[in-house]
Length: 383
Ligand code: IMP
Ligand code: MG
Image 1 (cartoon, helix red, strand yellow):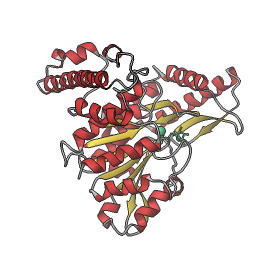
Image 2 (image 1 turned 60 degrees about the horizontal axis):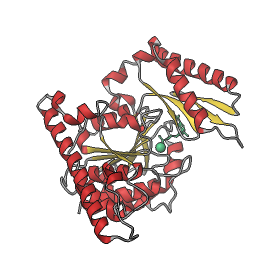
Image 3 (image 1 turned 30 degrees about the vertical axis):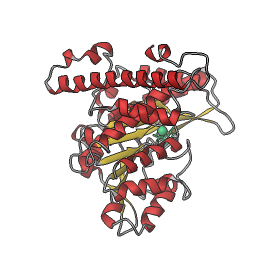
């Protein structure tokens, strides 16, 4: 509302004065929210979250791990996105998403230079276009190597689940990056070994081995969280069987041109070649599957996630909160404040990066191009 009220007034298209007034007022609005977040963090530290005004206004708010310099971030994004200079298009969802992301990165870099220890990236839409691979010509490769040069752990936390211990399938999708890390003369062997891949949300861990120059499969005993060690294979099988049955029923009911794929730790539905599943069908599948797995004893004893991948739906055992937390643990106890997860799926309904928000700071991007901008900001502000 304040955004609409404060949009540029007057009849002049360029209106320098009114744009400065809008800029100042938007800045003040973000300063107010920044203050509410600061008070929320203080209340949380004192164990008095019930006093937080922000939480009274937005009861569904998750835990906020760090301060967010929103006013400063607004001024940066205003320069980039012409927010206050726009007269007909008021500040949008994407403007706010960018401001939040920039505030999070400013706090973890410029304001606290040694804060960032682990940065995790989703795969599809974040590092490469949906269903594609990271090729040798991707501009992101140099940026990711830049992060490793700062001794930051770089984890790729993807839903794509390939159980082969050779890591060949991950190598195919990440070849451009892995070859560049292998050939880099700037990185030390220790820095190269800061590259990890967590596949199938939280099922398969690989780490780059500088001596062998390939991805090493890391055994479950070395990293599985205690709560995951207790999961029983029968429960995993029951959940996947129930999900597979429900997918088949839905496919018949909606007459979908689809194929169902069963894996060791996942089951998914994809369109037959030459066909497409529309967003409404995908969302219907996610909601139906969530409903049919609810209140089942087996699904209550383990964790799973059902999500809309944009052109398919998957039900994976585990989720990205477990994937990111396993990495934090395996790497010696990295905290949520020191971790940033970059991904494209943060809408709460049927989105798999959303779970990472429980255990880390997050940066919401909408394309590999935005991921590049985000990593370049990190590198600039860490100087
Ligand atoms: P992410 O964006 O890296 O998390 O990858 C999500 C996409 O990976 C899905 O939309 C699927 O197209 C693809 N995918 C391939 N294998 C799997 C799997 O086993 N589980 C979930 N998604 C998979
Ligand atoms: Mg994605």
